[in-house]
Amino acid sequence: EPVVANAVRTCPRRSGYVTLNGHFAPHNNVDTDAEGNEEINQHRCVVKCSSFGIDATGVADADCRGWDWTFIATSNALCLPREECEALCSSLGIEVCASIDMHRMYPRCYLNTPYPTEQCNLE
Image 1 (cartoon, rainbow, N blue to C red):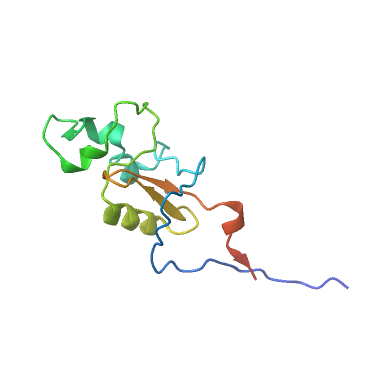
Image 2 (image 1 turned 90 degrees about the vertical axis):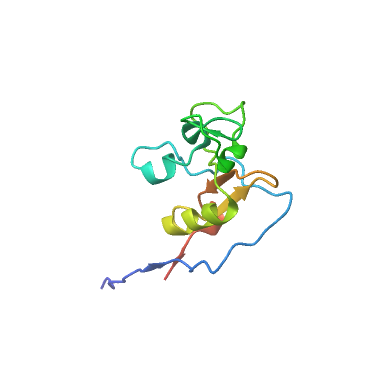
């Protein structure tokens, strides 16, 4: 006779971020340009900034030091300092944002989705 089983998916709580110098998560960025990501979209360098250190309205903005002329319209780069990037990632939850890639010198980051090896536990 078949047995009924219930599965509950649990994800670990993130208590902080670990810095790994010289590492990044390639090809795993959260799609910051996706429909419904308005909270994220406003921080995209290509939306927020018009040039290095200048926002889209022409006013000096320290966050826009993360802007780079090589960014294309669909770039996932966010012009945010580390603390704000970590807070944004945490607010999305570990199922959506598992880590960030941060530029060493500039307020530029990328949000990363979980890799398959970082999947939540099925109990």
